[in-house]
Every structure is written in structure tokens, then in C-alpha cells.
Image (cartoon, rainbow, N blue to C red; front, side, top):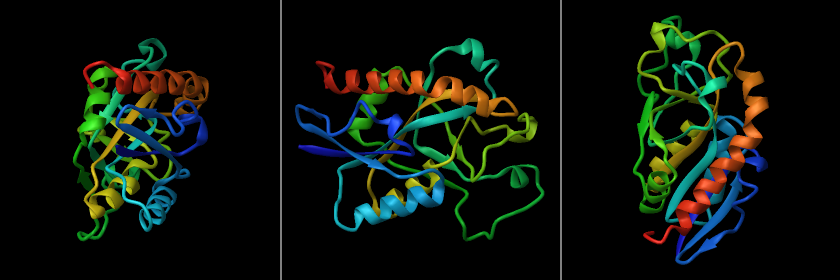
Length: 207
């Protein structure tokens, strides 16, 4: 049986998944906390005693270049490309030491690949910030698709441990001054819809 560790920042993002078993797949839940550091520490501690076949992050993200999240309805993205760039570095006002990674690309495991395909996920990169971006994204944000606060920390640990890692995210808001209000209005309903699609992807006859 393949064991898929399912990480989420908060319990609501995986409340329907739990210790779900579908034929030869078992989902193992881990609430990793909010932010890259908390997520990385939680995953590293777990991996001291357990080695899953794949790691899946299930959560939410904001869109940098969505025309209008209010009219877009439910969207989901599957990503294996993760940046860590804050507003000041994007605007050229700060930089990181060259030995610190700015982008990580992880392997997508077969279970996550099947879920993503059957769940109707689009592909895109995820920029993982330490605080929510409140300014409207301008041309300097070109090349960044979505924003989340945990994926980079998880991806870095998974990459170091050579374990496939994929993020599957509900797009809850536009990045910018209205983002937090949109997230609060959408995250519960969109999280439930995402979890339903993940479970449908696991139980699909051609899995």
C-alpha cells in the first residue's frame, strides 16, 4: 500500500480526507501550521521516524494575475515549482545570499499526478511568502502565478529527503488589498470542493 502524507496548514483544509484508504493508497494527515518555517519544521520532525511514498500539500492560494476571483468560481492548481520571493525582493529592494535557494522544483509522484489530472487542476508555479502580499501585483510580478505561505518550506524538506512532493491548491482570492477578505469568504467552501475532487480522483476506476 502506498502511503501519501497529506500536509495542510489548518485542520479545515483536510477535514474530509483524514486517514482515508482507497484500494492500495492510504492518506496520512499532518497539520503543519502556518508559514514556511512552521511547515518545514513539522515535516522534518515527522520524517525523523516515518518515510511516506509521496507528500501532498492540500491548501489554498491567491492568484497574482486573475482577472477577477469574485467571478472566476472554483479553480484548483497542481504545482511542483516553488519560489520564495517577498515583495521587497520582487521590487528589487532586497536580495538573498546566493547560497539560499530561490526556486525548488520537486518530483510529482504517481498518486498526486493522477489526482491532479482527474481533479481538473491547472498547472502553475507557487510563490511562497512569509507575509501576505497586500499591494496589487504589477509587471514586476511577471512569471509568478500563485501565492501561498507553506509550500516552499515543505518542498525544500521533501527535496532534501528525495520524496516526491506536489501541492494541490484551491484558488481562493486575488493577491492584493482585497485578498484576505476574499480568502475568508471563500476558503471553507473551496476547501471542501477541493477535497471532494481529491477523493474522486482517488476512487476513479482508472486509478
